[in-house]
Length: 439
Image (tube, rainbow, N blue to C red):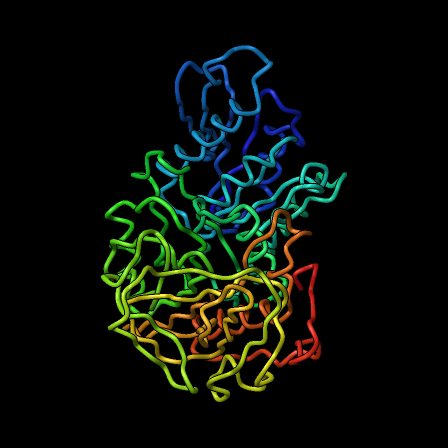
C-alpha cells in the first residue's frame, strides 16, 4: 500500500499531522505500507523532501500569488500543477491511496482521480456534495483513531478486488462530455461489476504532450472522446492495448474522432462527420436483414434526423450481449446515426433501427449497436446515448435499454462473457423504461 497524506497550509486540517503520523506508524506496524506526507502551500521557496523517522515529507511551495484571495481558476491551476508533479515523483503507483487531510478538496480529488488509478480517502464534510464514485472512501465525522483509519485504507483497496478495471477517456468533444462521462461512470460503478477511472485530456488546442493514459493497467477502455489528436506515444500505447486483446467501447460521438488515423477508423468500424466522404470507406448499413457495404455511392458520412423515440431490432439473439433480451425494444428520444462510412469489418450487428425519412432520416436500416472484427480485441460500438444538459436532463442515457446494453457490452468487451441477468425493467417494443438514477 502506498499512502500519500496531503496537507494544506491554508485550509483547515482534519488531523494534527505530526501526532497522526506517529499514531499511524504504530498502528501499521508489520503492515506493508509506504507513507508520504505531502505539504501544499508550504513556506519552502522550492520543492523540498525530507526523511523523518522513516516517513517521507514533501513540501510544495505556495502559488506565485502570496495573497489569500486566490481565484478559483488559480486554485485549479495550482492543483493541476501539483498533480502533474506527483505524477513525475511517485515511482510506485500500485495500491495508491491519497488521504486528503483538509477541507475544500473537491477539485484536487477530481484531478487525482483523472490522473491516477487510485483510491481517495477524505472527510465526510468535504465530499458530501462532491461527485466521487466508488473510488472515494469517506471518513465519518469525528473519527480520529489511527487504527480505525488504517482499516478504511485497507478496505478501500479490497473493495476493488474482483472488479473489472475500466478507463474512460474523455475531455474533448462536440458533445457534452462533462455529462456523458459522469453518466457512464455512474452506470458502470452502480452495477457493482466495474472499478472505473477517468482520463481527461487537456482542452481543445492546448498542449497534449503530457496526455499519456496507462491503458495497460485496464481491461476495458471506454472512448468518450472527439477532439485533438493524441500524442504519438499515446496512440502507440492504445494500439498496443487493442492488439493485445484489450476491450474497447466506442460510445456515441467517439466515432466522429480521428478521421486521419487509419487504425482508429478500422477499430471503430465506421464513423461520420469531420469531413469524411467516400475516401473514408463504404457506407455500411442493413438491408433485408443483411449487412451492406456500399462502395459505389458518393457522398459525405454521418448524419441523423430529429431526436425521437425509435425501435431497435436484434440481429443476433445468440450473442452474449443480446441473449435473453427482447428482439425489439423501444428506445427513448435519441439520435439515430445514419449514412456512416468506414474501413472496418463489422463482426456482429446486435441492434439496428429504421431511420425514418419522416424524421429526416436516411430511409435505411442503420446499425446502432455492433461489434468490430479487429484481431484479438473485443470492440463494442454503440451509437446511442446523446448526452443532455445535466445528469437529470439526460433522457437518452437514462433509458434502461441504453444502460443495460452498455453494461452487457462492457462486460463482454472486457471478459468475453456476460453474467448479468436480463432485468425485469428492460423496455419492450411498445414501452419505454427509464433509470433516472443510473442504476
